[in-house]
Length: 117
Image 1 (tube, one colour):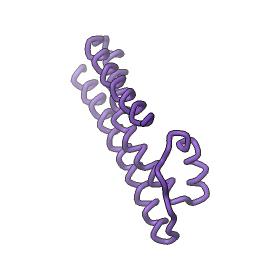
Image 2 (cartoon, rainbow, N blue to C red):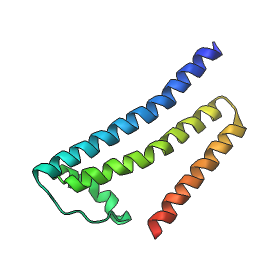
Image 3 (tube, helix red, strand yellow):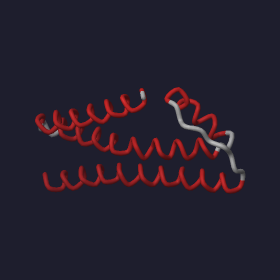
């Protein structure tokens, strides 16, 4: 029975990566397609602009689609680590859960420090 549970958990973590990459690819391709039809100038994405992306996408901004696609691609590994940490806690494997949370903390810290510069 535990082998079946491990297979399901492996499938869930694999699906997290798969759907994250598919969503990111879809956003990137949609942004590139819109940009071909209606070219727009795009500047750098600043942290304060992240919350404006959904509204910009609703208005058909190609740059916003590409930026959101890249953000989803960066967040996908974070989501996988969160899923893994949850599964380790659920299995009461606290040493691997702490390692997963440590990796998550390092990734978030690198994103924050990168956004500051």
